[in-house]
Length: 122
Image (cartoon, rainbow, N blue to C red; front, side, top):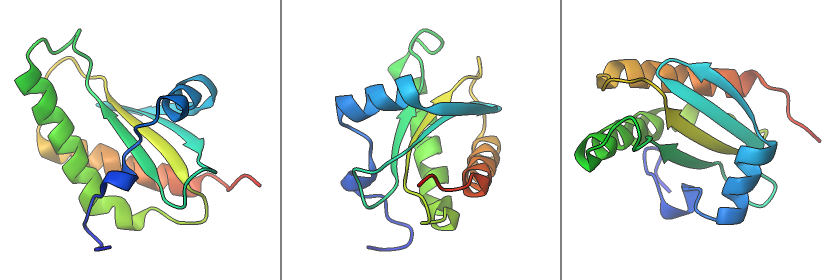
C-alpha cells in the first residue's frame, strides 16, 4: 500500500463500530473540526469516518466538497499517525460556513499530533 493511498479498508463503515465510536469514544475540538476517537482492536490499521451535517449545509454539493477536502488532508498527512495504537477516528465538520483547504489541513495535522500524544491503552 502506498504512503499516500486511501483504501476502502481504512474507512469506518460498520454500523456497530460507528455506534461504539460515538457512544464510548472521546473527543476534542479543533476548529473547524470535532475529532472523535476510540481504540480500534478489531482492525490492524486506523479507520476513519468523515461527516458534514446536512442541517448546516443543505446542498449535497457543499457537503461533498468539505468531505473531499477532509479526506485529502487526511490522506496526505496520515503517514505521521503513529502505529503504536490503532484508532477509530471520526472527523465531523462543525463550522457554519465553508472553509478553505488550508484551514482544514491545519486542523487535521493538529488532530493527528494530538492523537499521537495520547498514550496507548493496554
